[in-house]
Amino acid sequence: MKPISIINIKLLDIRLPHSPDVNKSFLIDAKQLLEKAPAKKGVYPELFHNDQNRYSDIQIARYQGAVSFTAIGKDAVKTLKYWYKLFKSEHKKNLHNTLICTERYTPAFLSYQKKYRIRTLLISDNIAKELNQIPDKFARMERLEKYLTGNVKRFLKHINYDTEDNFIKLNVSHFSFHPKALEVYHGQKKTAVDISFQINFALPQHLRLGQSTAIGYGKLTHL
View 1 (cartoon, rainbow, N blue to C red):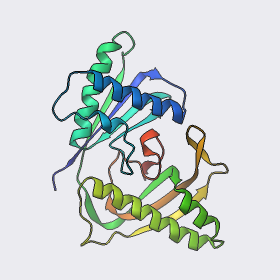
View 2: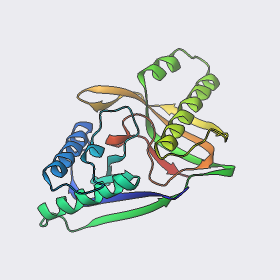
View 3: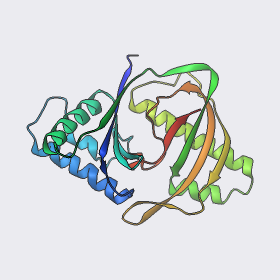
View 4: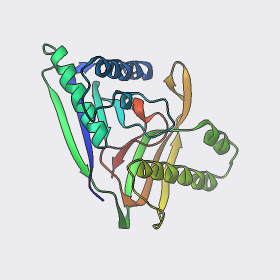
């Protein structure tokens, strides 16, 4: 399989409140900027904001208070780069420092289990209800393992990597629930969990898993 293109653009001069509503609005504004611009082959404004139940190609987050965008896949990378070009032309006086990181990710199984951690992994309402009905810690851990495995497979399916003939082995080593549900958009809230796990698969440096990844939740950290 050819490497997957990933880009992360940190607009170090653009600081906004850390709010899901603000993030969503910024994504919508980015989409509208592209829609007003001359069409360009391979650029798809809808990648900034899709209402479909699919992995988010373009995600917004914060880096030390500054706006940070990540795009995964050839089309998303090209779309984000074009948006950045347009945005930069409209904000020349405000943009002085931008950090751009590119990644070439090749999905692959490993002969060992690599360690990762996710802080603020948001889980679906149905899974949250299931977990609340499971009193045993290890049974909860097993359910979270299934949920995370499903999320990894969903991402791999999104980048057209077939895992049917291979076995993904994921083990959760630690988890803790946030005391309060976290807001995602317009007052809606989701259950959040901090989780550490090992998996026999190499995951990219720039990856988010779980619910509401488009607005910054579920960041994966390599350990």
